Image (cartoon, rainbow, N blue to C red; front, side, top):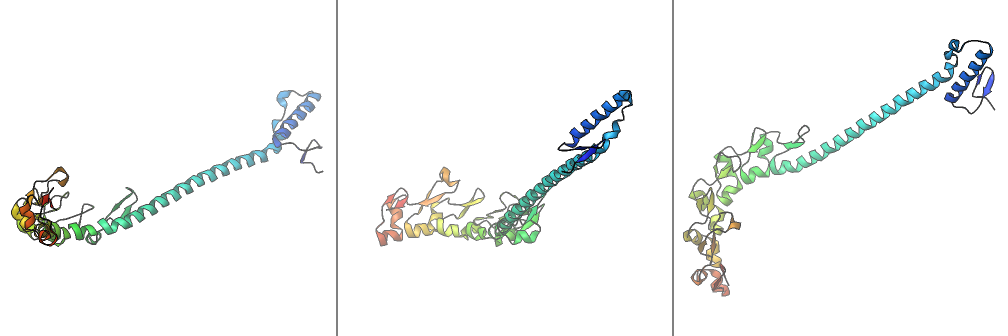
Length: 258
């Protein structure tokens, strides 16, 4: 069996470097005592060659461990950041089509429009006239954008209001009377910045009156959010409807012809 190393010519086995270093010092102290030398004269560095490689290896091991741990933390943080960015980009891809929010802002972790083209190509532009980029947001900026939107044809919201919260509103009764909501539900008069049902004349224009006898205006309830409606409030209303002649629904019950 080969010795790990020797101290004063004596082979040493199965000792850690620290224990061997201590043993080396003890033997030297005994030797110095036998020679009558004072302990203060004991050369501590004489056994240093045993420990220096150990200390160097331990230090390098510690530094390596710290470096690996730091690298692991950095890599983990980088991977987490990339995953958040990937999710953000995917979220912006869906919001791009709906509201023109196509670009992922890494600093704010939000989706924002890159240009007016993003706003103009969005569903919000087609439906609500929100087609221009102003101060990082898609907004309506003109009557032309409101008139080109679907809500002008459906709800009479054809005029730019100047308010970002409700960009397009009805400009007059003509806007309301040209809308599909007037033809279907009798919402033909401007009231409270929206097309509303305000009279029996409004209901007389509606398909609801012609087809199902809902020919009288009914005040809005809380759930209607201020929008009136047409209802069959009498048997005379039901008699005006096609359903009375074709199906015999000629009795007004709870606003409908039964």
